[in-house]
Length: 303
Length: 268
Image (tube, rainbow over the protein chains, first blue to last red):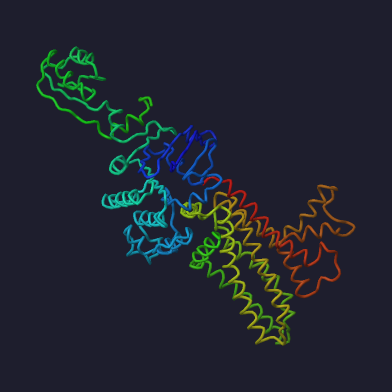
């Protein structure tokens, strides 16, 4: 059974289309990273999974249940860290978690949960005085209540320092190892790369890629970029390299040629340059995640 | 019973509001103070029924305001602060939220009401020539229904609209209509539309009296007058005290149903 299944989901707000025929499947037991620039529709998609909003068209199934009809059952087995949430200013951190425990009919010890997310020492302070990071941790503790089958975390590392983000990733892995499915959204690539089994990239309300991150890297960048410093970088040399099988681009860049090619075409490209003008030096540059991300989310690259 | 969990949390949250306690304190002191003042002014000769006649006027104006103040941010406040996302991430339905909210805020208003009547009863026992528990308790019961009606109106509006500015405008607008009884002009408006005449020249027809009685503040006074004091005399069923009580119950149910329907269809 899939943990999350969205089929042909469209959400319009008046004239604005937030999601446009989104198909998305998240398998049980995986950590799925939901990646996309701000405004791509990530929070809309998550809102649909939680019954916060109703789809204009399409079906949303979470844990095998139709969300529109059985949303309450879904949320009984799901832990949620929502985006742009608020805390009850007048209630303490402990009271927040107690509320989650009661709501889910769980038997967790609120103190243990608060300890796990690192706000136990502020448990009896009113949450209105918490910092952004502490609020985020508090909501994570509420999400972990009742050992849910699915965790939906919307930008979970917002407001956390790098140490805090590392702790959250550790908890995400622990939860996956316990058997839970983790769905988490981010616009920060490093967060996703460090922890996800698979990622989906959302752009303008559509999923433009879904795969393991290494596979995406290969698909997006053709694997490698080669930078060759030459004796005389001419357009003719660049043209000669472009003819080599496996080379997708070659441009003149100062005293060097910048070449994008498949990993196994590097040597052939190098030989072609040697024949044309002579090679002074070269280096290979792996496609960075930033490039990967941009290649999927920038307008000019087709999906 | 998911709504009970919501209600308990909401009560926990609301009782920590200093503003609510200030409003409650003013209300309690006001009702008990009026009771005491009447005793002093009458030189100790007043009996409880004299006060109970007077009470609905005082309570009607102030308790409705307290209930509206306590209830009107219940849901829209959570939407604006974003706490509704924490709330609805947990396994609560929107119906649980509306019911839990009206129960939680209703409990706050009920505590204020009971405190104020308890203190009033003490004043009466000490300073009045007589005190009958029966009619007094009937007044308390009807007053709690009245308070719950205004709580439900506030929570219903809070569930229906998406900004606290709109909710405040609607809430306090309604308060003016009910408390100053601008509602009284409704039969005249209806008559004008139907017959081109503002005023009832041959005396007020029964339907107009009934319509006037749909104002919860008026219904409250009729219910107290008829049930606790037996003062309404011989009237047709739809103008009776029990009909007035039914009107109060309708003011609990209808705003909540409308509020739920609107909130259930809203995107957060």
